[in-house]
Image (cartoon, rainbow, N blue to C red; front, side, top):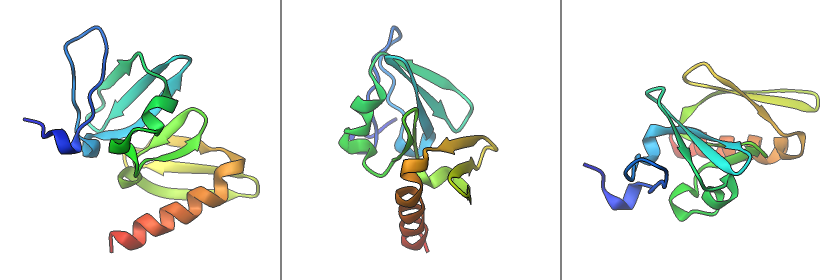
Length: 118
């Protein structure tokens, strides 16, 4: 059973799904849709844009690292910066690109998140 305080409601063709924030690895933009990537490997497609979810209060800890990705910092394994390029490796092995304009912001927020969890 999901509690409303830590969950997000998605609208799609299936009945409403409400994954917990700690189940969401990252969100990926796909034109005017958003793909939720869950830690168990499941993908859920929503008919809302990534921008809508970026402003959602339930996801305020998530990081917008690229125009196509909004990720949960709980699943960051490693941040790699080489010159003007950056990538983030997730705990599931996936590697996501970091926008060059967001490199410093991402590095700062990752450090803050890691210090908060110590």
